[in-house]
Each structure stands twice: as C-alpha cells, then as structure tokens.
Length: 233
Image (cartoon, rainbow, N blue to C red; front, side, top):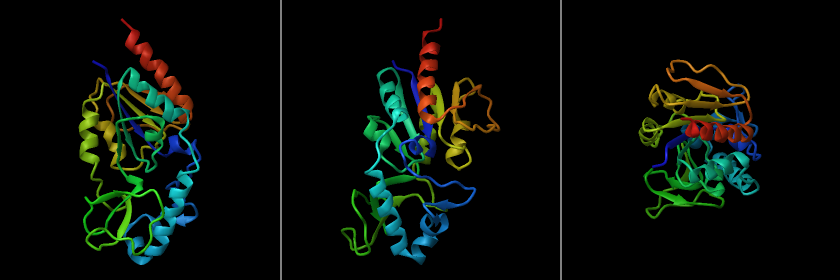
C-alpha cells in the first residue's frame, strides 16, 4: 500500500506560473482592495466590480500553465497516495495531472447560486449580472471570501489526520483556518516546509524539515527526500 502524502499548497506555487497574488501586508490584489472584491460586503456594495474582477482572473488563468512544482506533485502519485489541499482557486494542480485535489477557498472556474451554496456549476467563461441559476437566482463566483465559512475544512482535517507525510508549499502559514491544518498531523508524522522565506511554525510537536527554496525547486528536493526516507532501513 502506498504511503499517504498530504500537501498543503498556497499562492507561492502558482506564482511561479504567473498567477499574481496579494499579500496581507498591503491588502491589494491586482490593484484592488481585497475588501472590495473578496468579501460579502464588497459583493453587496458593487456586484459589477466583483464580477469584472473575477472575469479578469479567469482570463488570466487561461494564459498560464502548470509549472514544475505542480508537475512533480502529480508525478509523485506513481509512488505515493498524494492528496493536495490547496488554498489556491486556480486549476493548475488538476491540469498538471493531480487527481485528488481539495480546494479550501473555492474554484475560479466554477460559480454557485447566491441562494443555495450547494448549487455549483462549471463556468469557464465570463459571469455577468443576469446570469441566473435554474430557480432565477443570481450566480456568484465559487470563491470563499473573507468572513465566510470554509465548507471543505472538515474534509481537509480528516485527510490531514491520516497523513504519513505532510508538506507545506508556498504558503505563509498566516491564513487561517488553513494554516491550522498542520496541528492535525500526528507528532511522529514528518513535516516538510517549503518556502524561500520560511517563518517559525508555532505549537507544532513534529520535526519540521525546512526547505528554503521556491516551490518548484523545493518540490524537486522534497521528492528526493521522500525517496531517501522510503529506502532507508
């Protein structure tokens, strides 16, 4: 039976593909205040602005490709039972070939009903005011905005609790609740933390192996380390 490798990914892995991200330090995303385009309040205040913002993000996504980091994680499925829990809303993991991907913060290429959050539709193109579900309710981006619950969190915790290996790639570990997942690993579970500027991980009993590299280089090193551990007597 293959060992279970659970990987938490964040903006850092997609940034190498050209996906622009925002950082909490300035609160801007593509020049927009995140409170205007990534909150329920922003949606209520200016629906047109929010729809236009995510339409542009969808167009940008079509112009980029998975990078080496995404591809190596997909290739690792040959040797491990790989489960990816991502904070990213792009589909680069899937396009690289990963088959078990859980999106904590929603998916850019899907929309959902404003009345029924379980009514989710594939939506690769632009979304406009007047695009309605079958019951006549406006559709919105299938994105978990700031201040909203994270419906996939419980499943993410269950996956994490059964990890033989746990890796954190390209995330600052400052965005909760995702950052708290690492605390659900067993204390004997090896943890790998890949980030060019790693921070200290508080309240964690595991032995954490830090790989201070960008995501693509770090994932390549992660693969080597996993094979070394698996071959050790």
